[in-house]
Length: 103
Picture 1: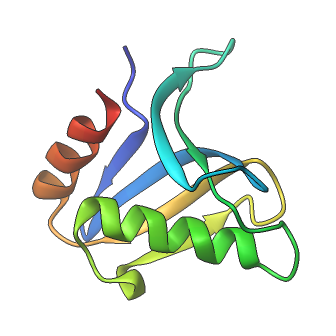
Picture 2: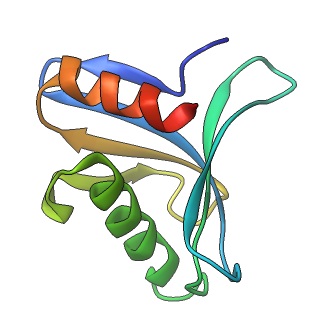
């Protein structure tokens, strides 16, 4: 299975498929799309208006990985379901944390 992230010198890029307006905010493991790319599935209660869903996603991922919210930012897909989050920190430690979430 492909990993839903790419290592960088200063952290990782995490690929996420976001569903807004969900009953609960939570991470739901990894799915592989038809094109073979993997994404971490996430649901947030926030609505997709004025960046509320993106902010909720950043908080959810930061809490799950044990990093400050300021270390997580949406860098691609701001208005799309498929997003790329940039997470600053130790790439090796972040990779292990993300792999644990993916199970």
